[in-house]
Length: 111
Image 1 (cartoon, rainbow, N blue to C red):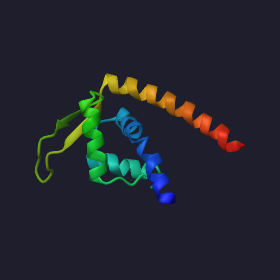
Image 2: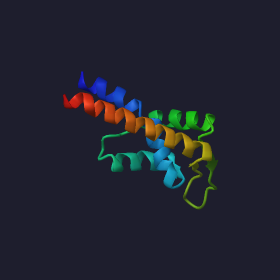
Image 3: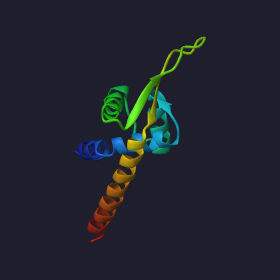
């Protein structure tokens, strides 16, 4: 039962986390997955099948853009994602909502 609640809570913040990770530099999918894993202390362990629909949705919404790199030598072509101006603005708004919700939850849980 605990796993069900954890999945639901994580699902609601994935867009925000992906935008936050892309705010510092462009990244490709696997890089996002690894950074999310490392920075979260392995709380967020995403699979490709979870991340790519998020990236496609954010791209469709104009919050990120994807650009393919050239294949060089043994390195294959990769699609790198970059946050847009609209994405940065959305991230600021989402973070403000997150802070407000977090404070509200903390107040309730302290009782």
